[in-house]
Image (cartoon, rainbow, N blue to C red; front, side, top):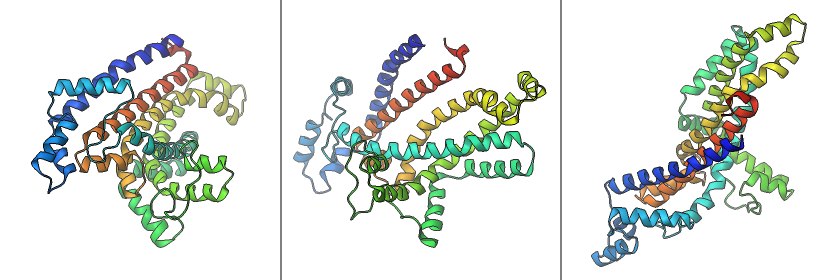
Length: 334
């Protein structure tokens, strides 16, 4: 197992280098002039030329990439042309909000999706199975940004139960940052009111992001459970008179979780990439909103930085999934 982890960690290095090269080349081939946009419409030619030299736009492409790659090793992810702030510092500022949103959505999807998958498998082809599967199909087909707008219409405009957007009220002071997660920081500070406020702002965007993975996890868990329930050892367990609850808890759940774990790992990357639309709809101050603003201003270094951090999180998540997969099924420890 340790050799597998080390081997996978070593594979991260060429993967990330190839990704940075691809992103860097594509960003330079795209049309547009980020320096001209950052300088403003009334900027003089001298100012634009000075800014191009300052940010290295006059250097050959290979030299700019070499400076970028060697800078990454020292923690320098480049500088935003538009804000003139270090990209790495901005990524660290916006990352906790996105991670809190993604983990909340994933928690909703897993906590609801796995029990529903088990339930529909055990009572398959019944009215409850058909009802939940119909809802799941709707969940997979529904675009997240459209679901977000529907949730805002229902729970903000009509019912008035939840806030429209943002991560915390503008006039309120958020809890002191320890982890960067407002919900956890509020609990660490013992501030139940702040915790309630943070959760109330989190519910709608997390729900909008959770519906599609919830439906997929439920469908995967249902299919895996049905396959396991048809195995001989499950039939033998039933013949021995073991209770349905014991069979599900002791034999079915562990084996059915293997395939579902892979889906959950893939959805971490899917959710991170999908935060762009949801964070824009809910004005959530995370990496998605940060990347959107950078794209609109053709500020490529923040876009590369956001893509790189999403790729790193995805690769590490798949490593954790492989480790868990090996724990559940020792045969895959290669």
